[in-house]
Image (cartoon, rainbow, N blue to C red):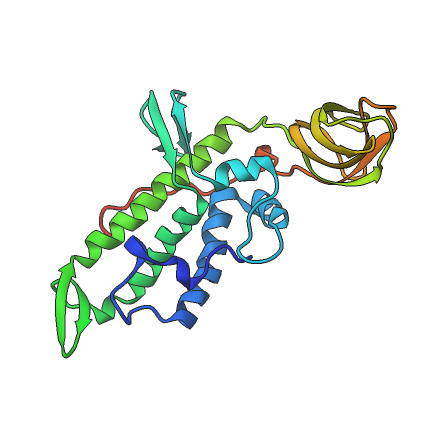
Length: 265
């Protein structure tokens, strides 16, 4: 799983010059990306998320459900608070939940983990910036660390609340396909897709001499399975596609770990 590289740790996630070691940071990225995502999703949904990632680097999710929580979003939140054991976990009613996206969340948590382990290189008076033979105090280490951690935690909680509130979210959306029959008599336009296990699929088609040469899904529908053969309506009703990947992300599998805000760590 490759979601981040050391080059992503810039701006507010950048430590003083010379304090990041790329090899060490890569090990932190690998270790804590997996740990925090496992806590975010729970084991089953985490496994589904990892299997949904694209090949290459950096990886991104293919399925609409995972894309929703991967990217930044905001949502009105006015549902009842829920309990974890004897502790209240949630937000006040009638709030707007804001997520900066999974990448920003991971950068915040990884920054926290890395900076915490560097505390033995910091003075008792603040985070030091190497400058020739002198150390210049730039900020309180605890201040920066808690700020990044708590920012990441806001996104962590927003994602969990979205998943918790959408456990009936559909899966099986149209994602990728093979064009198996080009058909005849088609013209450019938006056409329904019929057949298969699901419903609601539509696509905008590109044609040449009546044959379908390409298409883009405009309504991804739901309930489809890999291997479904769909007919493109229109023309002579003889163009078909075979589905090679459909949407994952069954939010009913969520069993994540709830985390508390930290003001002093």
